[in-house]
Image (cartoon, rainbow, N blue to C red; front, top):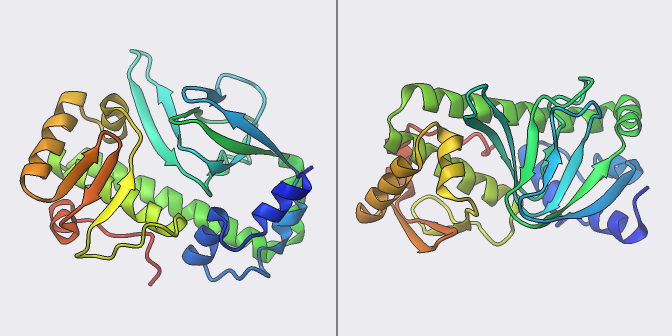
Length: 253
């Protein structure tokens, strides 16, 4: 079960998971009250830890409370495909919760903390609180749509367009969950992107060399700046949107 301090933290309306749910859906804090009933076990993780192994028979479901994680699988030839990046406030494994095992593996991009969720218990809670369930499923469906957009970008766009699309996706996700990053179109927005170029490349179906060249070109063109190895500043958001033909799925109509 959740400890008292964790329970209190997860009921704070300024917590990332609640900022996300109330930004992306019509949910109120009252609608999200069943969160307090979900059994969770907090766990610290180190950079590089594997938190889900899709070869294991046991099913896992987590809530990210700090740090960055990624979902991936390997092809028979050893090549890796990265499907999703998880940040504070995201669930890892919710998309395939009804299956008997996880469809992908997940690892830690950075040190962080996750809460393991008791799956039978959350299924019972979702069944008895349909309004609460509808908001969780709505965000899960949105994640699926965002993934479809990125797959379309990988299949049909050139390297510059793909990288621009991915940077905008990450920037807009940060806007939803972080109270410290609220830059609007036309203004600079600096956000953390703690991934090496090999992993970045696996997110968009390119090579690390392509990523390096493209980020250099974007910097030279004034579209972005790179204050440090893990920071990206969006300087010309409209230019990136036009380049990528990007649609912000994280902005409610």
